[in-house]
Length: 303
Image (tube, rainbow, N blue to C red; front, side, top):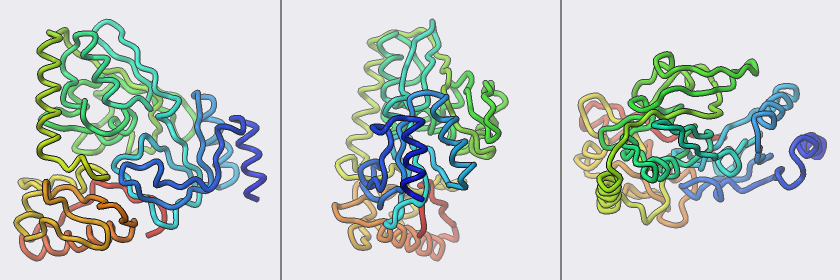
């Protein structure tokens, strides 16, 4: 069965873009995760449509992967198809005061293009470790900015295989959610609308935010970024710190001593370590403050 499926994908994409039993720890910022049955690298919308058509016909589950931030993959891996976007679908084009980018473009690349074109308004996103597609799905944000503030439109592939271009007003973007997420759409590209600005001022703001991240976040360790969503009226990191959990460990996973909102891989963590640690944190914060933290990290595979 596996060989037959591999052959189908090879006929669509070519052998060099079809991997089997691919270790997912190579493709997540946590550096954790067992093997995926199929790991595919599409280069066009037609490739993506073809992959999803095969998956539906064969009853194979699939998951769309950016650069693997905000993701914890099971130690057993994933019994299905990983469609990786950011390797080949990452084109960024400046169009006047707008930037059009494919969903696999890193936010850092979009921010660099904006800076080079003297376009202001995207500085907040330059250090978010993700792709534009994932940022649209989750309405990514940092330092007072959110993607919905600058997004003009997104082009998506629906579950029925239709391609739609949806203006931001119809994307229902909220805190870490969007219509893209709730409808199960797949982002193909997006257009960001910015303002003309002073390049030196844009550079200075990006440098300032980079310094803030470097001094306050545990960037020297693998992690998935902020581990928990911000609860209404609170900060997750402060609740965790005030629960006495700074530096708390389970196996190779640890609540960062630098920023308690981050769970880090100290070098040999497995997915179970991270999951168990997160559950302990949720329990202890609930017991102490009556607040139930929600994971921002997405879980993939069997836990």
